[in-house]
Amino acid sequence: MIPARRSIPAITPPATLGILGGGQLGRYFVIAARTMGYRTMVLEPDPHAPAGRVADVHLVAPYDHPESLDRLADECAVVTTEFENPPAAALAHLETRTLVRPSATAIAITQDRRNEKRFLTSIGVAVAPFAVIDTAADLVGHGIEYPAILKTARLGYDGKGQVVAHDQRELEAAWHALGAVACVLEHRLELSAELSVVLARSPAGDVTHYPPVQNTHVDGVLDLTVFPAADTPREAASIAGHIADSLDYVGVLAVELFVVGRGILVNELAPRPHNSGHWTLDGAQTSQFEQQVRAVCGLTLGGTAPTSPAAAMVNLLGDLWAPGEPDWGTAMADPRAHLHLYGKSAPRAGRKMGHLTVLAHSPEAAVEVALTCRRDACGNLQLDN
Image 1: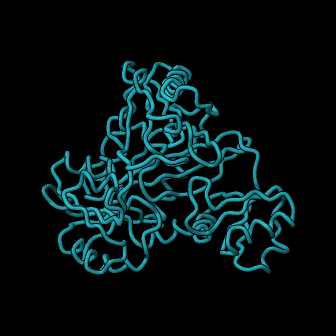
Image 2: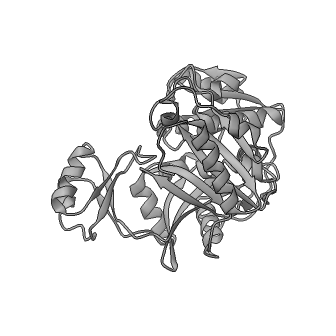
């Protein structure tokens, strides 16, 4: 049942907003919050974390550090997160003393693939055929067709914790390679497209979403996002909204979708702003990060209409720095291109160091310019695109 709309007092500046996690998603949340007049407090163990550098207060401590959690609870009107794996006990402790949005219950579902798949099927949302692998005995008689992909139930992201298996022998080897931990086994489908819908839901139950976008991954890591998506199924946004309502979710939620033939399946949920929503920083009325502030504070949600006919976003991974500091001259000289670097302390292969957004008259033009700017920046380094 969809919860009834309700009137809830808004949190307004100069209240302090807390966030668990100090990466680039937290950085943009902090920038949006401070621009709107809020104070900000980040709990993040890395002293050089991007969000900590721009926050009013950076608590350099583990996410479950009791004194730091107590300070968050004492000083913050609401606490949110920029990643899906904060310790459950930390969230539960915070919820006894202050608002936590999204709730610990919602995050607990999304941070474990077993819980997530079961939840989605329980509310009538289609997912790829799957089986839960908790023990070695579950590796036999699982009923999933090959090729299959084995994913750790927790902590896997950006292609980590995932192995493709083509037969029983490979499956058993993959499970042991992943540490013999709890996993979800899925049939690997032939995809027509990968999409995502980023939405926001307020404490009152109001939902607004950005247009669906089309995503391209390389080695399990998002490489390219394009707006508008080609041939988007009509039900994509309504499926995402149904999920948010069923979770009684508050905040920004990303729903990753698979298009298989004429059907649509939900792949994963991300209880936070999403890499595929970065284009909204430059190409939408309200960025996904301002929207996160609005949602968790109970403000009226911002407009989500695009401000350009088309946009493309390409990730900038640490591999680009292998030959030396990239030359951003082409990107900086093109008025259609918007360069975002996250201020991370050191580049390394696979690490998200920034992104480029290009606004253009068509998706094809946006993609061409984005890939050209990235290629020109990295000199002779060979890229997949």
